[in-house]
Length: 184
Image 1 (cartoon, rainbow, N blue to C red):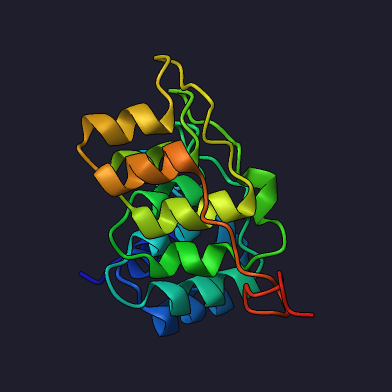
Image 2: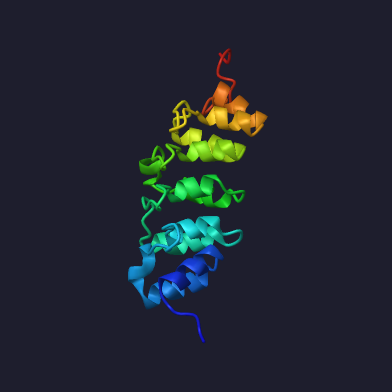
């Protein structure tokens, strides 16, 4: 017996990072673009963010077809939460280029965690850095009273702790390459 067509097939293909298959499902039934999984309410875009390979290509297909980046699953998580917690940083790097991404930067899940809480807890230095560059608030407590720094400390992620304590390094001058003083 063949697998049923429809949203579950789309979700499965997105989770596998199969952009071509996702595109085919959307072509067959465009209304499934923002379907939800039965178990936790993941959208195809959230599934794609979990893909170990093919995440960005699959996300490109879904975003071009109108996937809702503001979708929250049954636990209040957005695609940004999901991507911030994954080892594959390609998904988060794709998301931070989207024009509407700042609209979900401070969205909290049912535990009061933002994407930066997830990245800090998982020790994702590159992701914490990118979220901070976008303006993510890193001094905010979750429902348990934990800041991202607390979660990084508990996970023994020293580089993330240092970044959260010290902030982003100062960027060199935009035009002078950092040697602006004393160049008369």
